[in-house]
Length: 436
Ligand code: GLY
Image 1: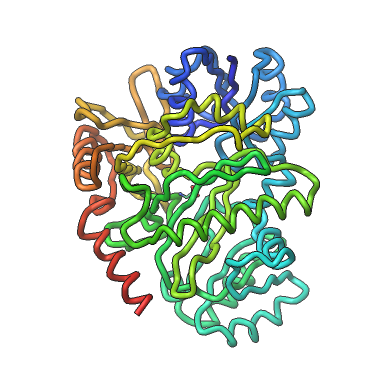
Image 2: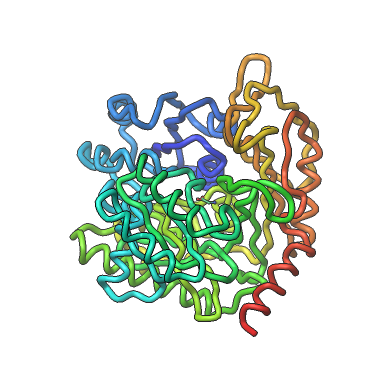
């Protein structure tokens, strides 16, 4: 079984590891830079950018894979699945048209509205021609969230009270967004606790993986700027301490309806990952956004738990046979903590050497934006290494992940609080207050 993996972060490292659990897998990777984790699992690899479609095409034609797995959003947005399909290569990952679920927030909000799917907050979409109407909409909302209509690496969404204070600032940010994006979405701010529900779909059947909570802010206690995600945890009961089973069912129901709706809207079946960024509120579960791929770091919380063969799951996604398999996950807790370069996300220190010592038992490292050079491992401009712990409960998993961070030396930092009892209790108290 020859598999082409596209992408070179920690998410793709764990995807590679999970696909390689099947002894028949021969892995070929298309990567932006030499990720030592992915390279060591690959028979061959090609280094190139995601917009170099000709290069991807040549590599794919050379290796003739049985299927491809696309990790990040950027190549999906460039149409890499359309390209592969033209070469008669199946892929886990949506076409460019379907990837709008992530790449166009206006598309997704409008889809939910058109097909009367629950989960949308109050929202309006503005462009350069009608941005003057945004003031009234913002004034009518108690507090708002401003979202650029396009890819921003998880860093473009601004929330009133967190990133800006006044309605004037909200309007100014709308105008700023419109300099770089075709439209901007203004939404009511939802109060609640966020969680990620990564679902696998063949366009018909939708299967949820265990829920995960990510931590977007750079510093301990949810301070500092937004990042791609500083770390995440999942629990052994496949719930989160602030969620009910009903919350998960609501999230899955929304995603099932969206999978149906996107087919009705486009005539294409979505084959891949539908990652719902959800929020549990006092009025039930609402949709913050979709991603058209696994989360990073959230992929690391679910894939190591998968007991079912991931190659079989991928084939079932492609051949639309997902209804025939039951995907099993171990009842274990996981914690992932990202080591990131000093200065991340605004001024990350790149080209800094990273030294790796002895890793504790049960811990794993997943390599992200690092570069293997002849004399060792170096930081680039983004998250460097994910330290992962897995155990029977959250407390133990957190300790393992934290210990793993101590074995890595370099000009790096991480959030010590992710997965700790103190932070999880804070989330639980917050949810209780919301529901009061
Ligand atoms: N952890 C957030 C994301 O993958 O977009």
